[in-house]
Image (cartoon, rainbow over all chains, first blue to last red; front, side, top):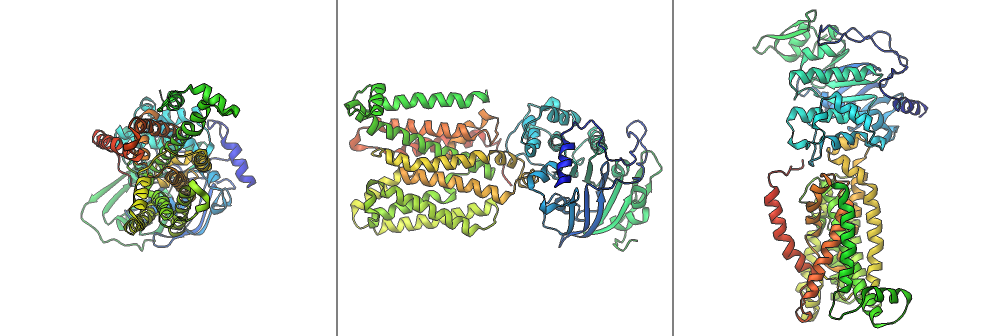
Length: 299
Length: 331
C-alpha cells in the first residue's frame, strides 16, 4: 500500500512535471519528420504493471510482460485475437488467471477506487447514454478523485481539441468528435496506466495523429499507455513496443522491428504484406490481396 | 438555469403547502391554526389544520417525493427513460400485503395502520425474494426478476379479488388500490418518513455511481464502482421508497415515470443532478393532484391514483411523441 500511496502523491502533482522514474528513449516528433521509435532502453526498477502468465480461459492464453513508465505498448492482431479481452482483463473487468500486479500490488487486492485513480479504460465503442454536454462527460473522468478539477478537465479537452465543443451535447456530435471527447474523459483522470481499445479508429488523419501524439505525451509524463490498434503503420510509427496476438495466443512481444516482420505478418493476416520500417513514415502495405494460408506457428 | 431548478421547486412546494392547508370545505386561518396546533391548543383551526389538512398535505408530499425520487434513480440505473418504479415488484407486493388485510382482517390491533403495515411487509417480502433470487445478477436480470415477482403478486391480488368474502370487502380493496392520501393521520406520515429518509440517503450516496453509469457499465466499473454492489443499493432504495409509498397511499401511477422526464432537460440530462428536483416535483405534482381531488364533492370522490393516471398517461404519450427521435436505446 505504501507504493500506492507514493504513486497517489506523485499523481497529484501537475503532470507537466517530469516524474522521478527514468524514461525509455522517446521517439522523435512524428509530424515534421517521423522516425522509427527507438527500442526502450534500460527500464526503471518497478514496472507500472506486471503480467505473469495472465490468461482468460476461452479468450486469450497466458501473456507475460512488464509495462514500464513512459511506454506506449501497442496490441495488434487480427479480429478475435483477444486484444479487447486482454485490455478488459488489465482493467480488472474480466476474471483472469495468473498474476496481474499494479505498482507491485495484486490488482485484485487494490481497492476499486484506488485502482480507478491509477488505471483508466477507454472502451472500443464509448457510450454516452444521456445527452450530456461534452464538458460534463469529460468531468466524469474525475469521479475516482471525487473532484472536478477544472485544470485537469480543461487540459484534457485542449489536448483532444474538443474545447470548442464544451457545451455541445455528446450524442449530437460526429463519431470522431465523440471519440475525442471520450479520450478527453480518460485523460482528465490523469491515469498512470491508460488502456485504450482502438482509440484512433473513428478519427480523420489529422486527429489520428493528434490523438497518438497526445497519448505519447501522456506516456512521456511517467505514465504508460496500452492500446489495441489495427493500423499497423500507425502502430509502427507511435508505439515503443508491440504485442502481437493471434487467436488468443501471444505470438511476439518486442520492439517494432522485432515484431513486424514480413513473414510473420503474412502468416498472421493471411495476406502478402510488405514491410518497410526504414521508410519515413514506416510503410506496411498489402502486396497482393489474394488470401494466403494462415498459420499460427510463427517463430 | 440548472442551478435554479431546485430552489424554484423548493419555493413551489412551500407555496403549494400553504395553499393545500388553506383548501377545504371550511375557512380557517392557516398560520393561526398551525401556531395553535404546535402550541398544543385545541382550537377549531388547530384541529382542522393539524389533524386533517397537515397530515394529508405532508403525506401527498412524501408519497410524491418517494415516487419521483425512485423513478429518477431507476431510470438512471437502467439508462432507460421508460423505466418505471413499479418494475421492482415492490408496489404490487405492497398491494398484495394490503389486500390480505382486507381479505383476512389480520393485524386488527394495528387499527387503521393495519393496511399500511401489511403493505410494508408485502413490499419488504417482495424485495427480500427479489434480492435472494437475483444473486449477483446485473441490473437487467434483477429487474426481470422484479417484473416476474410483480406479475405473481398481481396474480395473487386478482385471486384475492376473485374470492373476496363480500362485495363490501372487494369495494374497499379496489378503492384502496386506486390510491388516496385522504383519511390518514400523522401515524401514516411517521410510517413513511423513515423509509423516505433512508431511501433518499442511500440514493444521495449513490448519485456519483448513477453519473458514472452514463458511460456504460464497463466504464462505471473502471471508474471504481463495483456494479453489482452499487446497483443493488439503488434497487433496494427505490423499492423501499415505492413499497412504502404504495403501502401508505395505494397505487399512484405515472408520477415516477413522468417526473424525471419533465426535469431531465433542466438539469442538462445529468442523472445525479436529477434526484433532488425529481423528489420535489413529485411532491408538487401529487399535492396538486390531491388538490384537484378535493375540488370534487366527497359523495362521488375521485381517487388520487385515478387523477394521476388520467393526467399522466396522455402527457406521457405526448412526451414519447415529442422525444421519440432524441431517445437513445440502452444496451
